[in-house]
Length: 104
Image (tube, rainbow, N blue to C red; front, side, top):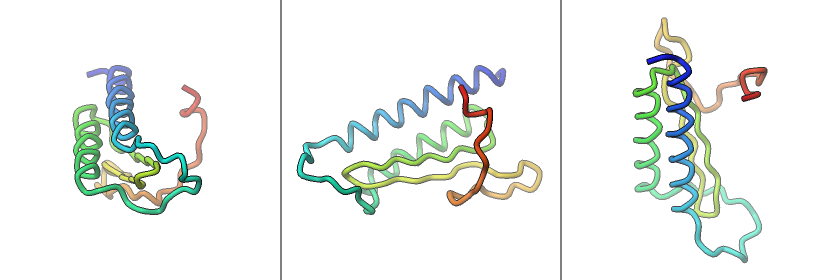
C-alpha cells in the first residue's frame, strides 16, 4: 500500500476512533467546568486500545500517539516503535518538535 493511502486510512481510522470516544463521553454535564484527571472506564479504554493498535498494524506506520480528554475521563495511548531498527517501544512522554509535517 502506498504511503499516501496509508496516511488517509490512518486519518479515517483515527477520526472514527475520536468520534466514537466523543459519543461515548457525551452526556449532559453542564455543571462540570473543570477538566478531569480520571481515566476512562476499562471497556472504553479496551475498545480504544484495539482501534489504535489496528490502525498502526493495518497502515504500516511505525507509531501513533493518541490522547482524548473529556468529561468522562482521559485516554492516552502510544502504539508502535520509536526506532524500527531496535524496536524500542513508543512512550506517551516522547518529546518531538512539531514542524512542517503537521501543516496538513
